[in-house]
Structure formats: C-alpha cells, structure tokens
Image 1 (cartoon, rainbow, N blue to C red):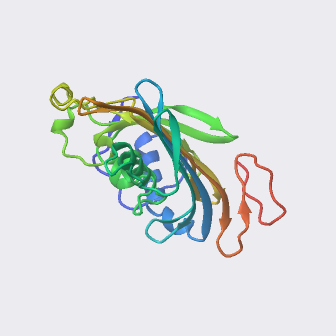
Image 2: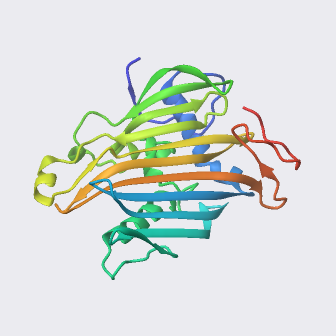
Image 3: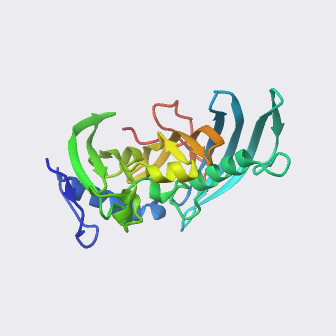
Length: 294
C-alpha cells in the first residue's frame, strides 16, 4: 500500500466500523488521544525513572534513580518526587548526592544535562502523561504532515491490532516549516484495532544532523530514538507503562556521552478508593474492581 499524506482531516471524531485505512486509523487514534485527559482523571500511579550517562570509554559519568507519585490533571500531569538517589564519578569512584539538579564544583555539564533529560523527556507538565508531545505523532496536531503506511494486522495479547509506519515527507529538514512530530521523526506504531489506542510506538530521527554543523560545532547525535508501551486499564482508558531511550551525544569537540533513559509506571489505582489496578498478567489483589483482561 502506498503511503498516504495526511493533508486534510475529517471533521470531528466520529467513526464506526472496522477500517484498514492507515490515515483513518490514525485519525481515530488522534481523536482518542486529544480527549484522553478526561478519562484519566481519578487515577494515580507510581513512576520509577532511571537515567544513566557513560563516557565514550564506557566508564560511568552519572546516574540517577527517581520515584514519583503521578496524578493526572485536567491539563496534564502532576508529579511528586517521593525518592531520589544520585551519584557521579570522580577520582575513580561514585559519589552520592541526594537531590535533583546537583552540580559538582559549580560547573557541571553532566549535572545540567541529566536534569534536563528528566524534565524535558518525562516531566512535560503540558503533556497527557509527562512524555514530551513532540516525540510521538499520536495527537491530531502532531499527525499533520505525516505519511502513514499499513504494514499489516496482527494479534497482541488476543486483541487485534494494526502495525503502521509513519514518516515525514521526503524533503530536507531545512525545507520543513512543520514543528509537529513528523517534522523530525519516523517509526512504527502498533494500534489496538478495537479502542484505536496505541499499544506501542517506536521512533527514530528521520534526518541526520547536517555535516556542516558537525564540522563547525563538533556536535553530533547518534542512535537517537524513543519507545513507549501502553496498557489498557478500563474501557477506553490507556496509560503508558514503559518508556525508554538510548543514544550517543558528542558536543563542542571535547564532550561525549552515552545516555539512557528508562521509565516504568506501575501500581495504578483510583484516587478516591486507592484500588490497585494490575496489568500485564500481574497477580491481582483482593480489592475490587479487577482489571480488564486483554
């Protein structure tokens, strides 16, 4: 099937019956994502975040473990830090610190960068779930300009799903005035064929950093990409349960780091009743109601 350029979207979010058209499938996904905030209200969950930086020679540079309690709000998410562990490498050993944003001797590129990674990639207050909106073309606005191609239909945990490829139009990033996700990203999405919600999405940079930039500024990013997986907790209610990225950054000639980000959301519960909701085959507690089964 030839990729289809999304140029005009049908008005509204109506749509019934099965479809194999990747544009229509993603249109329905976009509508569901746009209105997902309201359905998530009343849920609370715990989040574990691990960030790590290594030098080009493989030696550790810095690492952090953060734990949060996350509460969806009418506009995005509210996160409360409940636990923190940090450590940086100096003089042949790891030295601990106990708060985000710690800088070693006042000037600390690693300290600033790892804090920026945590805030920018997993702490976007205007996002539905804290994950930066621009990383995955799921919402209607971010799908504008995307090319979608149907790769096939498959079963995921006994539920039918579509696998769809997305990418920006074939032109250089300098020619693109689009600030949406498809202005920079390509990848694949697995979409639940019943709820029209994402099950998993993987993205990679669609464009390489121009050679002139690498020569003049000594800056390059390799292997930049992100992955996110979702789980279903109730009728029409889906949350991201895992998220990760791993890439290499070289900047201003002398600075090079291998970086990784790993996030896990778990122990979902209703805010008023504190009823735990399990997923992915976890043992169910005695509390009711039980989770929906895939």
